[in-house]
Image (cartoon, rainbow, N blue to C red):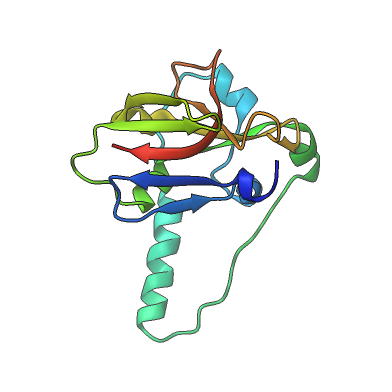
Length: 164
């Protein structure tokens, strides 16, 4: 699978089209260990107050003309990245796309053109798996979708997320 084929887009009844590169998720603090996720009860994604506070402070500093230091602290456990499977919540990406108030469903389009349609509210517990045991999902990716009800049989080969 080429790099271009490893891209996922969010489109449909949204104000913005979002392009996701699953290869970059490895360094995102929101990533979750899939083994832990699959053993736990499905939970609703909620942003932490630390993320909110950091954003608010950056905005205040920017507005007041202060220089902002880049404080990106990327702490990565290289052994975990090489041996574990990871996913990332769909919700923050969907929110960035600014979905319409009329959104009723989310459709996961697969490489072969088939579709899986789920209720819109499902996004709150949906995780996009982007790596398996340290490697990208080249054969069955770019992402697998777990919504809390399909953990035994996730949607694979997902290339597009459409809000309808």
